[in-house]
Amino acid sequence: MNIKNTIDTRATFLKSLVQRAADCALESYNNRSAGDYSLKGPQDYLTETDLAVENLIRDEISRAFPEDAILGEETGGEPNEMTWIIDPIDGTENFARGTPHFCVIIAFCLNGRAVLSAIAQPVLKTIYFAQQGKGAYKNDQPIHTSKTASLNQASLEFGWSRNITIDEHLSVQRYLLEQGASIHRRGSGGLALVWVAEGWSDAYLELSMNSWDCVAGMLLVEEAGGRVGQWPNSVADLAKKGPVIASSPLIANAIEGINYPNMKLKDSL
Image (cartoon, rainbow, N blue to C red; front, side):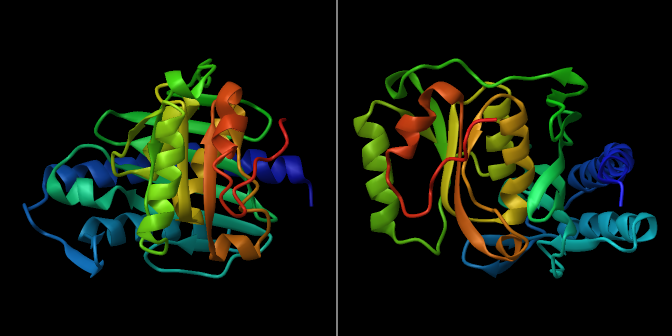
């Protein structure tokens, strides 16, 4: 197998696919009925659009690359050495409540690591794209992480998960606040990561995340000059939850100082 051709062919395909998925999501958003959603669990929203967009993406991938595995938030799957990762609507609560801060996430992974990523913000008609070793882009223009040099100057996002105790969350927040950081939460891990990639935010952390929420954004941060965590690092990791850290380079070591289990930085590129 020619790895370069494998990736380049899928890169061209992905750029077209994510635009079609974003168009589908935007049409549904503009025509949604207020309150038209269900809950998979506490604070775990599901809309018809989640399913429609994921099915669109799955169908297109299956036709183009029937040998590739697909892992999606809504319809599952089993990862292998070549796996597409899908979050059809990241920020579903925002989408359901009419807040225009949500995105479509698609990544392609080789051996458990993202080598292609695309994140579309349908309302703003923005597409973020990265290919391993080729930089990060927003609507075809290069983007870069911030040059913030200290946590007492930093603005960051901190996600939360019901898999983690309140005390663990508060311990991490305490450390960050004691270092002088400003902490936010906007309801979309995918967009939080691209904000780090383009320098609008300085870091994103979450103590337990699914791969479909983060692998695409982590590649974008890394290709934009930032630092990311070691997880996920294998095909098996893609089907599990893990801790996520993504940061502009100058404050990355200070962020890692929260000393949370398994939240360690990868070596710099």
